[in-house]
Length: 271
Image 1 (cartoon, rainbow, N blue to C red):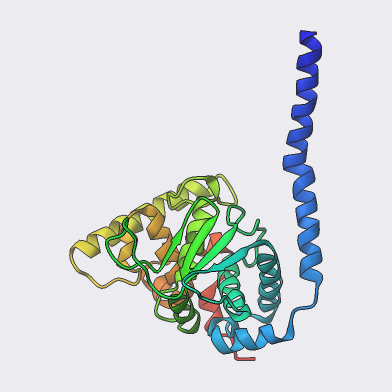
Image 2 (cartoon, rainbow, N blue to C red):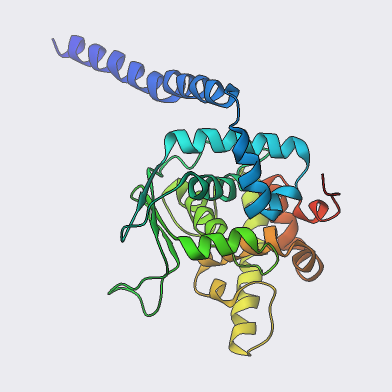
């Protein structure tokens, strides 16, 4: 009986593992392909052109990929407004567009731990914060944004501040279960270079903050390695020229991770 029980348990275990790692991902991928194949709502283009100038900078093929990823994001994630805030389609599209910009040009699982995006009208305070909060990324399936900061980040692409990039970079960092400034990289061999470069840049930022020196990367990144990755991601997408000039190794690491080159986008002609 013991042998039969063990054999049965092993069969069930193999089936469960096979479902989790092979069958379920297959059906998820097929569902997402069907979603992406649906026509893109025509008014999305107007929303993106009007409120998200960075959209006009990226190459046309990436624009199409971005809109396809937005479709999946909006299908899989829920949105909840607080303080009687009505969440409109424009709000959803702009949030999804900025979030999915971080996923372009590579295989992605669309922020798998995220279930709900909570939107506050403006900055808020909590008993755990020392000041106003503009966004939070939790490891429990929720991400918080403030709408005024979200809209400002979408419309101003050169100030190095984008709360959506910041919080969704945290989501990428948290995919392995730990917020430590090291997201899941494509190859195991890439971690050595990533750790060496980002650790050195993090320590440099701490030093510059203490000496009140001007920095390309927001000084909030000196808080911890997780915040450094988030603010470095903001600078990568919004201040690529300055970041590449002053921190070329950091720019290269982020370019290798995100699989895009925002510096090249600056030379794109308007279309």
